[in-house]
Image (cartoon, rainbow, N blue to C red; front, side):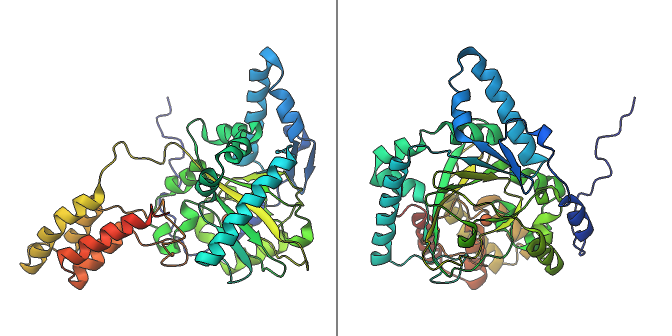
Length: 399
Ligand SMILES: [Fe+2]
């Protein structure tokens, strides 16, 4: 019997400094065999396109529904995992009057925020777009009725369940790209897509493969999005590149993206879903009049949670004076100090309140661990540290 583990030769550390451009070129030359996506109504630029009405019909087919829906979900999973990495569903929302009402409420939220505190978008040039961070909660509180009608959607629920299983958690950020708004540089998305390249190398390869299955990336078109208005630029099959979170910052890789990305126009009510490891970027809005209004979804797996809820701010405040005196007496090395802080404070800056917590390095806000180490290294008193750690905690919940 072969007792060797599968993938025994696979790399654990992805610290090679050379980007895998040849592998990316090979992957992104792949094509989608229409026979492999029998539920799709067409394949455009290797991307399978589905009809929302057909999906809704499947849910109405009595006893054969369950089997047929599972087959469709299986097809979606294979595309997102091993295929093009992206699907489009036409008319995923068929109640356009309701969608327009939701757009109006979101626009009111946007207007109110512009008046009270212009919202910074840390991921785009100033003025080129308007953002509503945490649009999901804000819509729910502003109009529970529209929130319910907007989210009572078979297509959304079936895609989320296909990729993440049950107990998923939706977050959403509205992005309105104005005429003249410029394209983003290509990137991957949450989780590892929000880490800098040095930190990425500290996560072993299996975590790089885990990250994409913890989130589903989606977009709901609230307006028609013709090509000239800059629908998302997508590089099919690029989610399969193991080193992609690191390589996406490489100059040659970015050139490859610019030469080979594809775009699909969307109509109001269409949804786009993709593997968060897919290389993508918001496109240029070259129109004079289209305000491209899209609600971006980051749907999280139930499994991005710890077993227990710990009040890590409380723990950090309890430990802080002890670490201070150990430092003063030379009873702890710097490495030991970092290890104690790692065990105590929250190391991950998300979930964040991006309205109020500006990203530190362009991607992620400061974590509780970073704050605690800064306090210890800069000699803050316990009172100052306690104030700041509580303030940081309050920021996450201050609407
Ligand atoms: Fe993105």
